[in-house]
Amino acid sequence: RAGLKYFGAATDTPGQRERAPYASAYAQYDEIMWGGEFGQTTPTNGQKWLFAEPEHGTFNFTEGDIVTSKARENGMYLRCHALVWHSQLAPWVESTEWTPEELRQVIVDHITKVAGHWKGQCYAWDVLNEALNEDGTYRESVFYKVLGEEYIKLAFQTAAKVDPGAKLYYNDYNLESPSAKTEGAQRIVKLLRKERIRIDGVGLQAHLIAETPPTLDQHIDAIQGFTKLGVEVALTELDIRLQTPATAENLAMQREAYKNVVGACVQVCGCIGVTIWDFYDPFSWVPSVFPGEGAPLLWFEDFTTHPAYDGVVEAL
Ligand code: XIL
Image 1 (tube, rainbow, N blue to C red):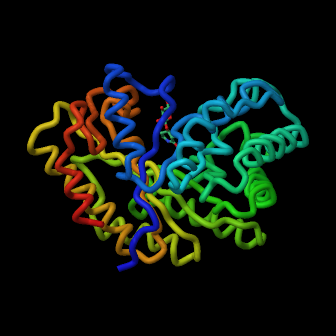
Image 2: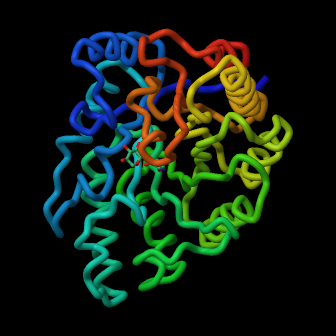
């Protein structure tokens, strides 16, 4: 049994939460979030480019600091998220026609200021988020269009310089079973290793579907595909959505799916931790992005736990 360093939950600042049901929920929410149930957290939004550098050269750490300081007060592991990503990017980055030289400077300045602000506090940084298409080719982001693969090297190189103590991760979704996309992520690891640029981990977001999850063996194969390259793995944004309404049947499927994915991480040496993407259904991003789907986390709106909670406990 390999075992985990942490089991955690991401959380948002109150103003950013998807759906705030009623103020009295916050007390109960905070008691679970900070009361010892979780050993790790990730700010779901506050450290993203859109919040951290909304205008060129104007940095704002207010949102990010709220969650990171709670993590520190409570002695929790902190995963930091995310330095370079095509989504929730500040509009100025996309709306300017950059020369390669200018965009290199934009990336270096952003990482230097943002990773520099939280230097020494992050167990890990998601340096690069969602750079791949489903077929394993690179996504045509503004970064890729102007700089090609070079932007990936630059991002990791810069992060390594700025925060030598943080584990540097590539993070993406649909990496939880072997596919062209997992091969693409392995290619990124090899690219950096070949150039002697530090990458320490691959984050499997693990936004899964209760009715059609990968099998335990597929999870294990996918995780081992990365650990055999010498990087660690974490499940970084785990949630398992179902077709609403929740029923005894789909909740049982969800329980099995949680047990398998967490169990795979526990079993593979080098899979070091699991983060669920919030823990309370009303604060999940899922219903707003996937109409007709929801209840993807471990606590229902009334703060009772899903059957999947017991599935997780069994797997740990
Ligand atoms: C989501 C947040 O949970 C939402 O609040 C926000 O509106 C959009 O982003 N992959 C990621 C996360 O890497 O940052 C995303 O988080 C979910 C998908």
